[in-house]
Amino acid sequence: MASLEEFARRIRRRGDQVEDGTEKLLRKTFVAVGAAVVPATPVDTGRARGAWLPGVNANPGGEGSPDPSGQTAIASITSTGGQLRLNQVGVIANNVPYIGRLNEGSSKQAPANFVQKAAQTGQRTAQSTRILKR
Image (cartoon, rainbow, N blue to C red; front, side, top):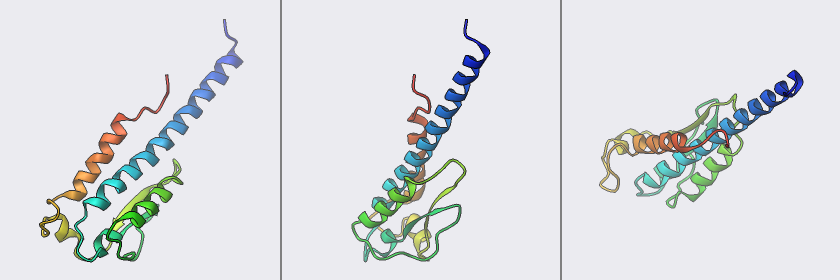
């Protein structure tokens, strides 16, 4: 039979695994949302696509730079996502004044609600990710 000290060590180890797994889940979900919303954003000049900016614990200011391919925006989101910790809130925001109209379907390049669809991608990612390994 395991001693009480051994039991306590196992519980602490499992707690550490839960924290690590949850942090990985947070990061993976954040990146999945960014990787879905950026390429789904319609492109004319690339201004709206480049305006997807990551933040931690606050809405990022500014509008970024035109990024027709979206690679710079995705790289920035991925970098920020890789640094998120459990006590932080990751934010992906777009501050161009017409992003709402684009999301409502004003462009024929993208269907309406592409932002919500990206959020659903994040939800599916979270639901399919294991926090604890067996």
